[in-house]
Image 1: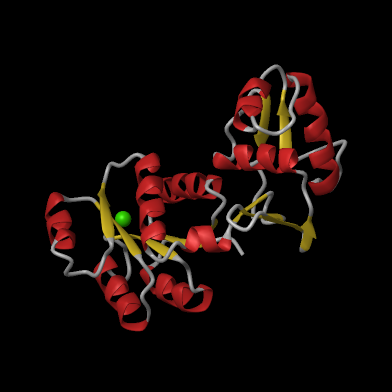
Image 2 (image 1 turned 90 degrees about the horizontal axis):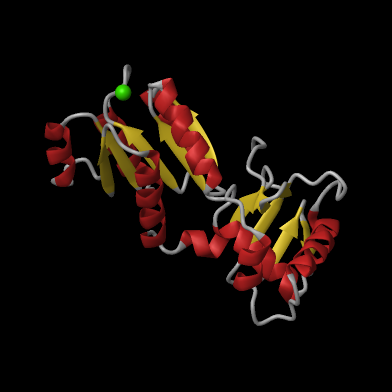
Length: 230
Ligand code: CA
């Protein structure tokens, strides 16, 4: 299972921006613009992290935070628009684990979310990460790969390539970069990267001739596909 992040933010643009950045981390993202719905969703979906805007139109962020705190220990990353709000969050009155002040960069939110998840018992490392719309689950600690519910055996080189690409889904890695990352295995040339990728695709792609997990970027290299929706 991928980690689940619940984003509670009434501004559609910010909500969707956060969604796309968080999904790039391989996390499963739920969103709502309503505080009331957030409380319900948190109860049913049991998210690993809640990113919560303080200024919501129906139920205030404070109330949502208090409600979450009364029923679970789910970490909360607060989004705040005003310095005064930030002061109150800093005082931990609201039970938030961290906060980001608007306007923020989505990268910053991702970094803080990662840090919180790391602190909350290494859930990320334990549960692995998912890609390809949840079809591919990679657990780097255990060296386990599950594709569409089936456990797949990879050679060390194939594993090395996949793990390198999974470092940053969506980022393009050149053959030379992959060569350097997987050094130590028998890996002769940039051309060899292509044949290992071909073997890897045969094991994990639904249609190896038309791959959408390990994508080719012409003239540049390979990347883990992130375009599909969960
Ligand atoms: Ca708002």
